[in-house]
Picture (cartoon, one colour):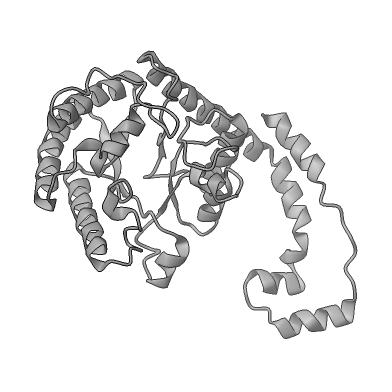
Amino acid sequence: MAAQEEFFAGADPFGSQTLHRPWNQGSPMESAKRRLCAAFEFFTKLGVKYYTFHDRDIAPEGSTLQESNMYLDEITDLALQLQSQTGVKVLWVTCNLFAHPRYMNGAATNPDCHVLACAGAQVKKGLDVAKKLGAENFDAMSVIGFLQHYGLESHFKLNIEPNHTTLAGHSYEHDVVMASAFGMLGSVDSNTGSPDLGWDTDQFPMDIRNTTMVMKTVVEQGGLQPGGLNFDAKVRRESTDLEDLFIAHIGAMDAFARGLRNAARITEDGVVAGMVKERYSSFSHGLGRKVEDGSATLEELEAFVRQNGEPSVSSGKQEKYESIFNHYI
């Protein structure tokens, strides 16, 4: 918990706390209650309809499981009151299974079953809290292959964090597109990171190209209902004024709003979609159709090549695609 609080307070591996918030005073529970009240004031001023949190964001960790659960029960009673007063609802709740030293070797993947049991107990309480607060989504925090292996893919959707995607060496939108392709995209942790850094910096997303690519996927799959765009982001440690919290959130909202407008124009115009359809037209008939529906065999592919020889070379038109995309940005 201490490590999380320091990070939220503007500390990083190269410097100590720079953000001194008026609500972070008193005992851990007193501070948690002040922070929650301040959060709901912030939500209402921004005009947002939903909020999300880790279990250890909203309440401190106790010295025992029982104490931690007691803290969560007390703080979520207050959260229910604030939700009722403001109309702001919970989108999803997830569990912090990384900050505590017990999780230094992993949670569900930990080689010590005792630690795995701690993680399981924490997740159970997280589910109970989510149900208590009327959460509309749970964060699967896993991968499509895991869910499919255990036959769970119809019960969960994925919450994609683009900052993690880029850390894995993929493009910003890669995991959003892949999750959507498998019908598993449920929500997006709307953040970004510095490409020259090797850790999760959780910056506010301001790049219009990135937001356009994400929102294009959202438009193409018909929305994120009942999921959403969640700002898993923090102001930089140099942004020390309280107004910077508003500037960061509003700027990122505007970036996604512009991305949505761009995505709508791209979809309505149909130029890019038409080019992609033409490029992949060989999969609309004959052997390509069989490949597409999964019925083609390796023997059929071999026979096709023996009969038809080498394929003709066709241009990928990379620069043309990029130029057309830039037109919408």
